[in-house]
Image 1 (cartoon, one colour):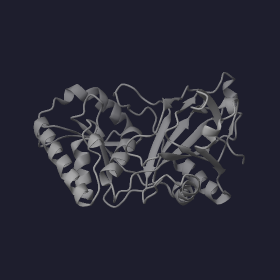
Image 2 (cartoon, one colour; image 1 turned 90 degrees about the horizontal axis):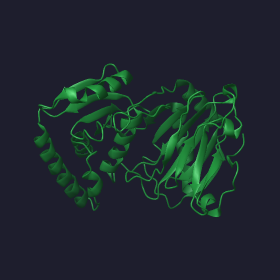
Image 3 (cartoon, helix red, strand yellow; image 1 turned 180 degrees about the horizontal axis):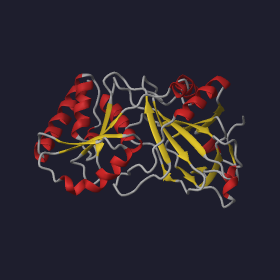
Image 4 (cartoon, helix red, strand yellow; image 1 turned 180 degrees about the vertical axis):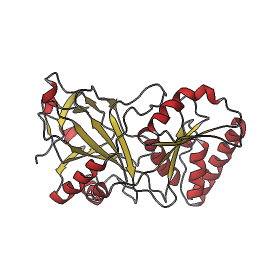
Length: 332
């Protein structure tokens, strides 16, 4: 097994200071092999607009704390009064074994990154399949529900063997030192520990015969907020990831809400889980809105009593649904 390497352009010191490479030991690779074999990837998930979809295969699993069985997020960006609830799935034992090693490496190479009981306790897996133009647009993973500075760990797996760098789905990072994109070939069984505030993206293979293209599976372990110091921040992280990469369980709508206006997205979600329920709350839209305001005030006061500070800006956003605030209260 070889370390990841930059294919065309060399990285700057700025970039090298923000990335650390290693490879899995044989015993950890054996566990990863079993995890890949059992991974229930979901294709054509429903994106935030309700009309878009990540075509690649996706999966999310976590090490949940007692009582954390579901995540709650807005149904779509323009239907924030409706809640999509997804069930939290336990992390496969073969992937679970990687977590202590990832924490040790982060502690050694990114000592400024705060670690806690939930560090690297959730992964998002992506499966890129030959014959499809699977990709991820450029972005950063430095959202407010990650501890600062944000760091993630990327573990790469090639089910059909190590490919030539340009004949698989290409991982690229943006080097701010010289304002250029760098092709970083993440090799089989490699671990890339990286500052999540670096722009990165995934591009399809360069043009070549289909039989020469090899698929790629990537596991990105996320460093979540401490559930005991910041239960709301922790549950936001859980809820966001399971909304976009998990299996939908139910949709909750306000009392009197016209469900025909969301029938199209309900159909799409039921393609992922035919048994998904649609439940009408006993509270109407206005009552739910008032209750959200009361719960934000309750959480803010509870945090202050513990000598902490609630992220009120995040708590006030439209994608923070009533059920998420309720689960934060219950967890506390």
